[in-house]
Image (tube, rainbow, N blue to C red):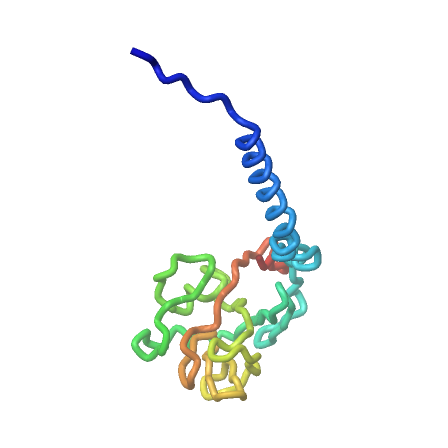
Length: 187
């Protein structure tokens, strides 16, 4: 009874292996520029977080800063604006979700959930891009005293919650924190 011995590799097997490896290296080398161009450039990485001095914002004033290429509204709301936002029933809201990057996704859109938190309810920080088609809303305008998008008529209240118009969602809240009494870090 003869036992089949494995065949010795031939020159042809070696050529198949070398050709396959050269093809893999060639595809990798050709695709690297396309993969590499998807990385963010240095200017984008530099603005991953920003610190904003809010010491000059008196009650009722707003500031717009640029973060990751988008406007961000920072507002020191008046006591009256905070009270009006707190008085709004959640059932009156078009979008009942907080849209706060600092909280869980299903958090209700209460004024406290969208503000800087306990003790800093007067401060609100949000991305200033209308959730309808990406326009930049005007501050202290509209039917609810918050923001108004003149492009298509979306109205946001002083907590950035959409109340009227075609916008489907509240203005999103980025990740932010107060690092001192007068400095807020966004990102």
